[in-house]
Length: 216
Image (cartoon, rainbow, N blue to C red; front, side, top):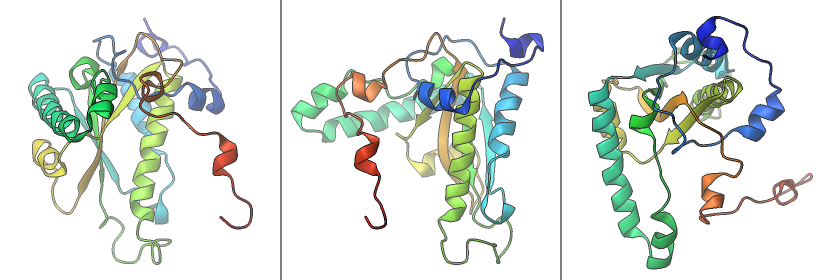
């Protein structure tokens, strides 16, 4: 039984350890459903994210109904097939073994939404850079992900879907947009090497290639 389930304190983990251990989980979900106390802590971490103008432009739709999970998993599978069919043969051979979602296995989906209208017309900090709003919602996603790792919970970000389909599936009202479906649940392990590296899809690049001084 996890510390969250017993009500005990969650073991401390440095943010650096959580960043290092974080993985986009697909195949490692145990099939158990996350407990409510643990889920609430993870959602609270997301809600504690910084946001432009303190607008908190996110909402979290928790999906656990098996029928809805099945419907979304089937939709994702169709999107995956279309992507696979678009690949040249050598890339398809690399892609085919890669599992791209754990919608059913995780038992819980968190749909993170973005509401550009929250906070009214005059958003402090968004006047010249409109995207700071959606950036704020993505920071909430990152907080959820790192908090989950600290709790020993896996997260997988599903991006193989049509936005209009997901909008209708979970009843997101206009002008709000769903920007992520996160599969969240207990895992058997965190892989030491990210899946896309393990399966040969793409290697990471060193920090030295990403750092520039004064100009790009």
